Length: 269
Image (cartoon, rainbow, N blue to C red; front, side, top):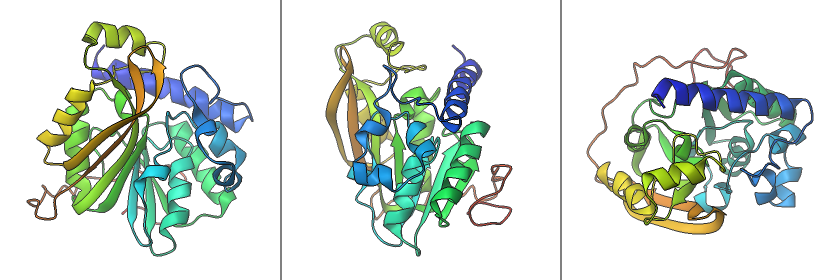
């Protein structure tokens, strides 16, 4: 599959999920997703029904991200906004939560969910996780919920994560990871049953990819199986305090959802 066909397939899948959730249907109960079941009743009660129904993740990154008041959080592949909205509540009025997604229907749904929840310290940005449309060293925490396994160019995703993180910043990611003994062909075969359109990385490849972009304190902790040899995994890492400055791509245009960002301006950072 080419990068373009992978993006098209992911976009089509999540557009359909957004439409279903917006109509009150549950798209998180399929065999390829645990979805809203991974969030506590208290977390679910904080949010509009559509945000929970649109959850297609394999974990709960909010439970491991250890967010603090005043932090800026970026959610890669933010979907209907469940993790953005929960993050925004935890970082408080002095913090900010940013959701990045390439699917217009999901962005529109997330905007509605934010408005319904009365959460204002959020932004939703249109773009791809292989080319994050945010300036270098602009966020404290990167989270993601079962999205990086969908990426067509995972090394590019890791480079972008390292670029946008401030020195001392960290990641708290839930993702599907393959056991090291599986071949690429076996991963692809199993991945077709759990939505890994572009194929999941192995544990060793995931660690190597994070190390290659300079991240440290890396841990990959399996939480539950999703297929034979494929595990939902909590991924943590941090950017060293003495990391060299990242290339500043702040001039990159910041595409936003048509309804605008939560900040009310024409840009998103």
